[in-house]
Image (cartoon, rainbow over all chains, first blue to last red; front, top):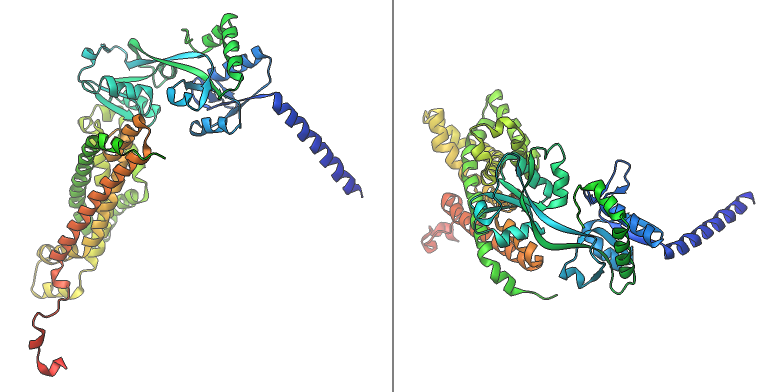
Amino acid sequence: MKLKKLFYAVSLSALTALGSTASLAADKIRIATEGAYAPFNMTDEKGELVGFDVDIAKALCAEMKAECDIVAQDWDGIIPGLMGRKYDAIIASMSITEDRLKVVDFSEPYYSNVLAWAAAKGKTLDTSKEGLKGLTVGAQRATIAGLYLEDNLADVVNVKLYDTQDNAYLDLAAGRLDALLSDKFPAYDWLRSADGANFEFKGEDVDIDDKIGIAVRKGDPLKDKFSAAIKAIVDNGTYAEINAKYFPFSIY
Amino acid sequence: MNWNWSVIIEHLPRLVDGMWVTLELVFVSGIVGLLLAVPLALMRASHNRWLRLLPYAYIFFFRGTPLLVQIFLIYYGSSQFTFVRESLLWPILREPYWCAIIAFTLNTSAYSAELIRGAIQAVPKGELEAADAFGMSRALKIRRIVLPRAFGIVLPAYGNELILMLKSSSLASTITLLDITGAARSIIARTYTPLEIFFAAGMFYLLIAAVLIGAFRLLERRLNRHQHYKLPERIGEIDPRLAD
């Protein structure tokens, strides 16, 4: 008898708990990020998501006075997960591209990506096409930097493409590469690490008009809410504060 | 699903360039690997215990670890040491091409050594006894009897090893080499047509494998011709008492 009562009590409370989370979920905005792209989104020692994207997501939610849940999702499945309503927005340093615009909507950009050259300190590197002639330069395969090398410099330099950014760093450090072309901000993070201490940015950044936005499902009104919130945190200085936490220069 | 033939045709020249790289990798490391494998196999088949144990560690390591790990150890591992970067070997180890050749050569020589050892031990006892009866020295016996016989025996298995290596050579693409697979992956990064390009790449591997298989069949037919049973040509002239 006692057991039966207990059973009822437990199932009743479970039901109410279920009901309350269900109603909460409706108001909550669920945001996905990748968690493997330092310093934009990564996990700290406690396993929690941190980084520029995560801070921006939290600031935007505070600005919109919305409750947010931030979840980690592998890059491959991040757009399918959005379409499958596992979450409502992607804040994961995603470039706004024509291909992606066919399946999702993007907010106004919240930062701009540029490419930068890195090479050994003390070495002069002329990053003009003329100056790079005959050098060996590397980039990660299937990235904007890799495509840029193939499209613009393949005729004068020896292009080496790597599976991961880390392997490209390794070969730059080993001296197999004269220079590396990569997204500027993650490379900035590497240059500050012990492994990258002997390297620095060279020459002018390469502006490839790469804008980073927040992806939402097609036609979702969240798109305009996010755009307005981005404008608001840029105007009220919150954005600059977060920016300064990661980079001494503006990335907006 | 739109199958896009034009993307294959358009990028065919890059895949053909990749094919030459793949062929070079397989043949250079195949030949050097075989040259290394013969002395290793002779040591492994030796009656001296120490001589037998010496190559064992080497073979054990290269057969027991994945080729990808070996490539990464040679390519990314070697460059971690300053003394390697300052040594005379660096101009070689600096190049992904030579790192791949070294990794494939060592790997295939370990496998081939075991294949050849098995073949050496399968040379019929009677033939060795006959050589002894002729008073052949050990060196002469190895040169005239053991190795030629072992090569005939090992051929089918060695053909298999080469084909396995052809396919393993696709791992060279992980250290920036533009072999067939490397070329395919670079094309896909631009065109987003993995199905078509990997299909085309697969066809290139099939083509090379077909040529290898054919070449080994011819070689086998020639080297092992004494072993194949052939019907007597003039069957009617057999002794009538046996014909029945």
